[in-house]
Length: 172
Ligand code: OFO
Image (cartoon, rainbow, N blue to C red):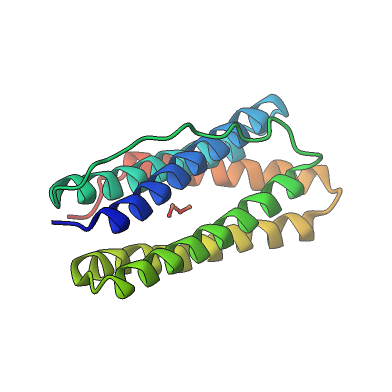
């Protein structure tokens, strides 16, 4: 049985993951509106991942007899000044989520909740990858600068990558 205070902290993280879902969806539609279909598809893919993160936490709280309480999800921004600004916002958000996961691990440790702490290790590892991929996109966009042709090619390549990933069955 999960302790009430630990469940409350997990509920806070569930809300943040759903906010992440909203944030990436907002970026997806913003980028679609700028004609960047590949980047938009990448953000949609990330949004879908965030939904699975939220549901992993949701299922964990339920499995341990805790109460899942869904709070209101804040509205994300609707626009960004540039593609780079959106990518930087995504990177900053992932760093924020990493700190939040660390805080949640600390809550589990303080409550001597070994199941919670062990479960969260997946998220700790996932955040390393999430920060890295977000940083890579920022780096690529900084290199591209104002070069429209290079942005076109990056967008095309990212779109192809998302399509390939969608067509490839997940490893079991
Ligand atoms: Fe973007 O990461 Fe969830 O946790």
